[in-house]
Length: 186
Image (cartoon, rainbow, N blue to C red; front, side, top):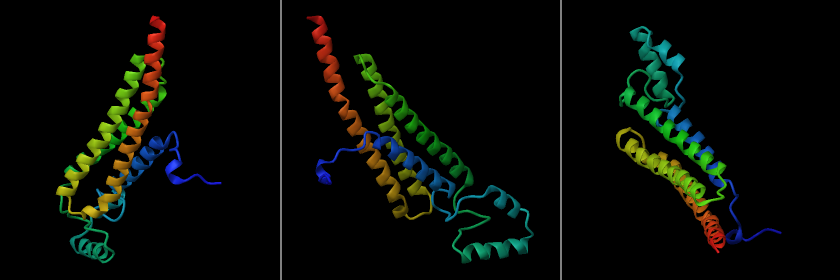
C-alpha cells in the first residue's frame, strides 16, 4: 500500500544525497567550461592541437564547427576567467559537502552543540546561496543560453529547501534540550 505524496516523509539524508548529486552535476558543467563547450575539456588533446600547422588548424576548426563542438583555438571568453571561476565553484561545492558532513556528525546533547550544528547548517545554506550568485554572474558574462543553467539553479534551490527543512527539524532537539535544562534547575 502506498502513502499519499503529501503524507510522505523525506528521506532523513535526502539533503546529503541531493548535495552529492549537485556537486557531481556542477562539476560536469565546469568540465565543459560552464556549458560553453558541448564536451568535456581534454587538456592533452587541446595541448597537442596548439602545435598544428596553420592549414591543419583550419581543418580542425572546420571539424569542430561541423559537429557543434565549439571553437578549438580561440574562445569568446578569457581562459583565465574560466579557470578561476572553476576553482571557486569547486571550493564552494567542497565547502557545502564539508558543512553538511560536520553538521551531521553532531548529535546535540547540550545547547552549545546544538548551536554549533546549526552554524554548520547555516553555512551550508550560505554555500548554496553563493553558488546561485556565482551562477548568475557566469550567465551574465559567458556566451551560453541561460536556460541551460536552469536545471542547476533548480537543484540548488531544492538543496536550500532540504537544508532549511533539516534545520527546522532540529528545533525539536532545541526544545528537548531547553526542557531538560529547566528540569535540571528544579
